[in-house]
Image 1 (cartoon, rainbow, N blue to C red):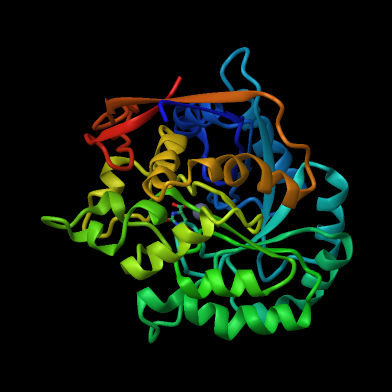
Image 2 (spheres, helix red, strand yellow; image 1 turned 135 degrees about the horizontal axis):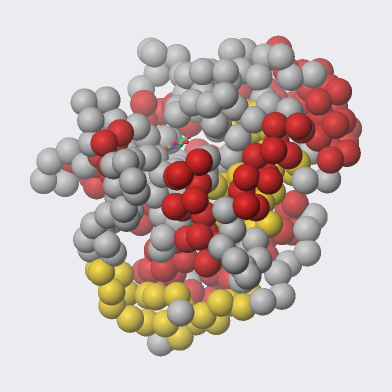
Length: 342
Ligand code: DOR
Ligand code: ZN
């Protein structure tokens, strides 16, 4: 196949940050996607409808002239979130979900939930008003191996949570393991997003010829067995699995450091990366469902009407995008891509 035309996709998990970084990264997402679920892990996090409204205004102000884009907002769940916050979020119309980070799990998650068992009143309210819960599904227990944090989260927290709230609609974000695939497949009112890096790379990418900080994200890349399982899920045609890039920009300085930040920046070339992953298993015919249909169907939003086109063409990913401070290094910088969005 030389050309691929798809319904315009949406990104169901995205970090756009704020200030200068927001202005630098947002145009790339706007070029490829119509809508995106915006992660609330700013510093301080987006916890109230008022904070989400102000952040949404800043995002809208950063959309390039004449382009269409809809930011879909989320609130950051903390130990202090109240059922009234859920009712207000639902009433706002523009807050589409609540995001759960275990305290200390990842970038700017210090305000995250310290004990998921303490949030039941909030989950009850979410189930009642049908507000989806987006999970960073990893435990933070120091005794648990970093490669097993997702599996242990599912066993220790998600299984009991689903037993307590079977009707609560949950997205297990950026899944990385066969355990996650199996759990999502077997459970009602459960979906998952999948990133391009977890479809294309296994954990060897972190150490290819030396340490590779630009492949470090959380959840961390896993064993090849798990990469194959999530690739199979993404290309299966099941509406439970949909696109969420988790594009998470950090400056070069903050990635290439003795204690580098977690996150891969993929907004530049997300659809090209997904196309390559799907083509690798001869499943390009499944890309449109994954990228453009199952996400809006889950969120109860209309599917987009516009289209995008990708063509078969070799091009080189730039080494860096310039910012005024330190630059921004895209995922797989300097390497060749075989698809290009036109
Ligand atoms: O790699 C990641 N980066 N994982 C996350 O959960 C957060 C994200 C970020 O905000 O940088
Ligand atoms: Zn994320």
